[in-house]
Image (cartoon, rainbow, N blue to C red; front, side, top):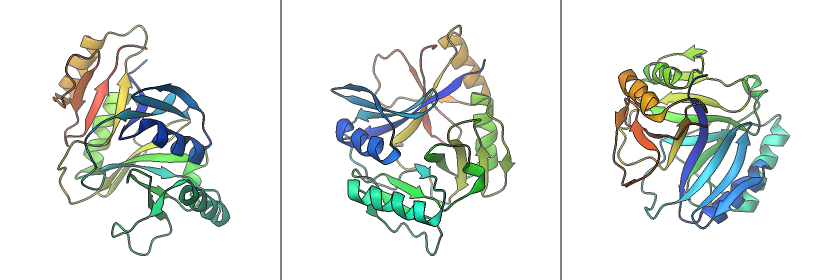
Length: 236
């Protein structure tokens, strides 16, 4: 069994409030709560983890969630529900597109997509989308990390779907990465795996260690070839 993508982690000024927003919007339960972290179910074996971080958001996130809809009426209902819960429609230069762009109560961008058949197997979260200079190269790198297949790799877009749960997608952008990402992925070796061995494998694949001020923690912080931070947790 390969290393598993287990969490999407979101830096939060108020993890409890932001966790409640996303729990209500996705109609998913809160699975864990402490003073500095709130966990929300995402899909089978995956969670949205909202962690307390003092840094304020200063630029558009390079990682965001795309939400699925099943019809124009469902899309409108999801947007209305998001706004009712505290989200706001925003303009990030998207122009005339069939999806809606919003920001959650802490300013994190997300999209509510029009109906797309390729997401018929997912829950409400259709995809975790990462800005990329080279989407095919990024997809190949992450396929090596997670064991997910690359089903589409074009100059401007690449996709790694899961059997159930959101796809991991890369979309071409021109803007360089400027600050630490406010959303990142957590990976974990299988229960019979070994953290140092797996970190060594990922480094050989092209990941590099980074210091984001994590101090003495049981996980290892790495970055992909375009600088996107991710964590490798203890085996589970």
